Length: 70
Image 1: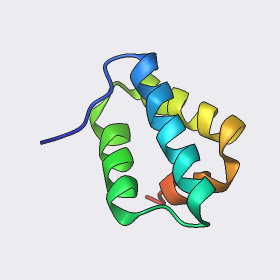
Image 2: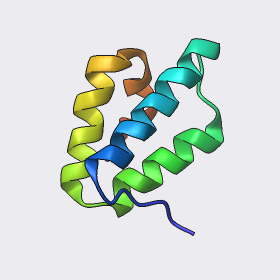
Image 3: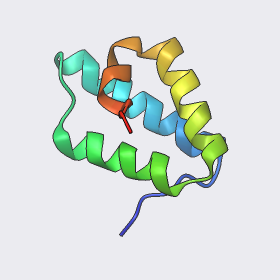
């Protein structure tokens, strides 16, 4: 089942999960990366943009996990 963000609060919660994951170590679990990438892909594009804005502010070390080359 796909994980989709329905509002900014859900995106904010996802950012907090990523921040907490980074506090435990330098890497993020593959499961979390897949889940967040699916949410970026399957949610309204505005929520994906907001996710990246917030990750850059609050967890810049995580950006590398979510940037994909197309």
